[in-house]
Image 1 (cartoon, one colour):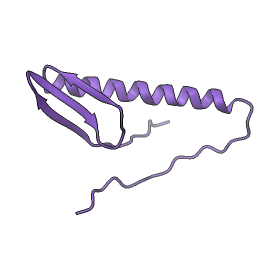
Image 2: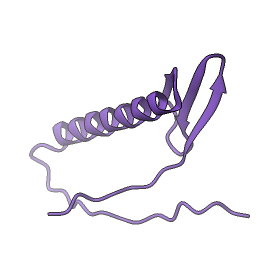
Image 3: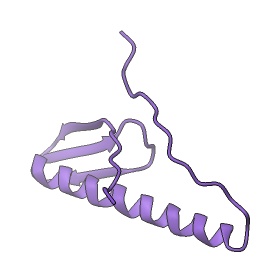
Image 4: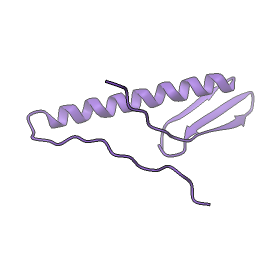
Length: 80
């Protein structure tokens, strides 16, 4: 089965001797790196950790319950 992909907007700001990064659509996921590549890698790793933890918590909450799980698509286009 193919792994689904989801698109977000990463923002990187030059900050002193490095870069501060965050995901525009996901509050609370922030990174810092001495290089842009470090900030990118850290941001991706942190986003994966957050999604994995949220899925784990949801699975625990849903144990023994009759649930319907489905994917959905949401356009991320910005308004002009």
